[in-house]
Structures are given as structure tokens and as C-alpha cells.
Length: 243
Image (cartoon, rainbow, N blue to C red; front, side, top):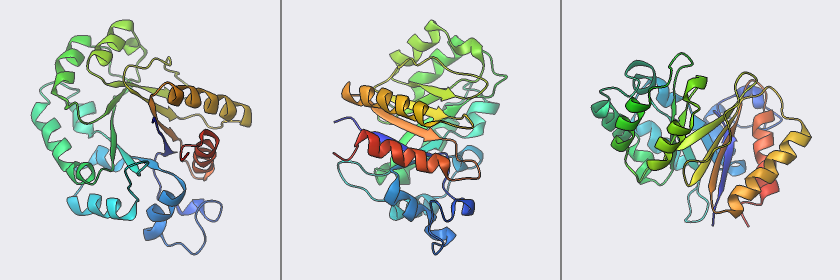
């Protein structure tokens, strides 16, 4: 059965008290409480440094797992891959980065790895086609392109041939077409606000994807208030992901 994994891009925000985190929960208990209400989080920490095994093991211990709907971490690919090498001559560092994520993978907590490229990086389909076969098929990957030149049929076909998802990043500046190139969908909802009508329409779209057998990973913007977390929880209830 297809599953919805919903959350926010981060969890460690004292400003979420008391609307999401109870006043009595200390910062070290944020993740454990978050995982009682949401079933996934997108991690930016891995963008700037290789995580230690101790850190990832701690995250796994703080979150639940069962064979049905365990908690999953979507990890952003290291900036060396996306902003420095930009997929060129990147085989050795790709292996190093994915090896660093092994504690999450072995604990069955690793969700998709998100490659988020800089807005100035223009389309290079040949480079993309050469790089994607280096990615292991037993890990899910999503690619977020922030320059409009990447949004072409040839790029979508290349992603699909390699089972990599086009990240559907929605913002006030750029909206990626809702094209699905993998057996899962990856949404990043970056707008400042999502009124009730928009959230209802989103829920219907997610239900349709789930009914079609496609898992969905969806992350609201976190900002300095807990609205994103509350909307993600609302979406999980609306889509009845536990049923």
C-alpha cells in the first residue's frame, strides 16, 4: 500500500512552543515529540557536512519504526555534489556521502536523498545522464532544479529512465510542473501561506497519487512558526495514512 510521508524541512525550533511542542519539552526532546505527530522530516544538516554515525544513530533511536509506516528522514545531498562538483567527477564523493548515511539506511529510516542545485546552474542533460547511473537503485533520489532551463521533456525522460524523482518545488518565484518520473512523488512547498482551500486541493491530489500506488514525500516550509508542521499533521489525518 502506498504511503504518505509528511513533515517540514527541519524540526529544531523553540518558536514552535506551545502551538506544536509542549512548553515542558526540552530541545533534546523535540525530535521524539515531532515523530509522535509527523512521520518524516527533511534534513538540511547533511548539506553542509558529513554526519557522524553517532548523530544518525541518535536520530534513529528517537524515532519509531515498524514494517508498515516507520519514520523516515529525507536528507539533502552535500553541497560538494550539487554546488561545487555539480555532478562532474563526483563518483568518489557520492560514495563517501552515501556511506555516511548508512546508519539511517541500516535502521530503515532513510527516505529519499534530495539533490538541490543552485539557481544559477543551467541545464546540462549530458552531465545528468552520465551521473545518474552512479546512484544505487536501492535508495530513492529526488532532484530539485532551480533554473527553468532544466524543465524540459528530455530531462524528465532522463530522470525517469533512472528512477529518479523530479522534485516538485513550489514557491512564490518558480513552480515546477507536476510531472512524476519515479514510483514516488517529492513535494517541497515553499510558499509563505497555504489557505484552507489550497490545502484541501493538495489533499485531494495526494489521495489520488496514493490510490495510484505512488508513495508521497511532502515537506512544508518551516519558518519561525509551526504552521507548516500543523498543516502536515492535518494532511496526514486527511489522507488517513494509518488506515
